[in-house]
Length: 271
Image 1 (cartoon, rainbow, N blue to C red):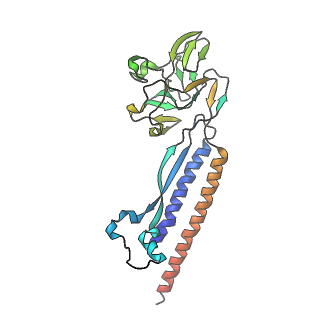
Image 2 (image 1 turned 90 degrees about the vertical axis):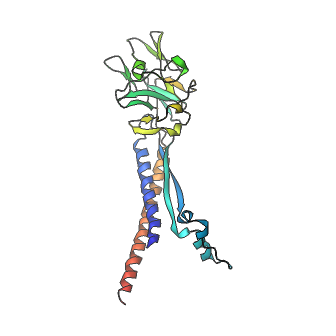
Image 3 (image 1 turned 45 degrees about the vertical axis):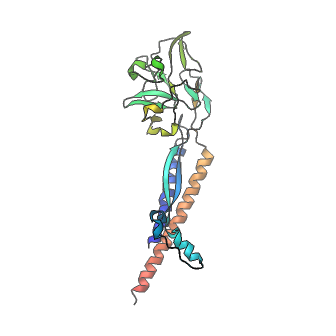
């Protein structure tokens, strides 16, 4: 029964929706987390056929003729892709001068063992070597000032060292130690922020260097704050419940198809 693939495609799509919503809910309290969302589309097998293969009867049309013409009996649900929602999260005050939050579309530039990465998680601290690092110990990078580029050169040369003293960071990301400017935090804007891919641990990968805007960012840095996740708990829990109920309903349909198939086979074997 080829029709079984229709509800089965729906079950697979709802399972992926459940997984995505569950991951969003699990990261409600993750600093700087950006929720993921799925995009679904209808796939018609009739679209695979050439125009000459579509049967359009030269007669007065009946409902079944339309049904056959457009291949609605072979219509499937398909996950067209997923994307990260980069909408602004609420800024939460912490009182820690090394906690930073970005208001706007920019991301902090981090040097991970796998290369330069980007993040919205502004929970920073100073390690034993006096380097400003994130929660995983990856150094925060300063802005590259030469050649008019936003980010360039050897990333190791842009690691931020913080000496002892009063640390003040203004909205532009300038770091002042005892009222003396020492460096400027690199906050990067992108031509297409949706081109970034998640790596895990709140980090994003930019695969194309020309995706980085070579203009001053309009984003602002806020000292003593962190950005909450942009996950709406009520919305995601509602999505979970809907997806779970839809999945159960589709399971019942699949079971009904299976019972019909078994009954048909049983009846045929009597002859």
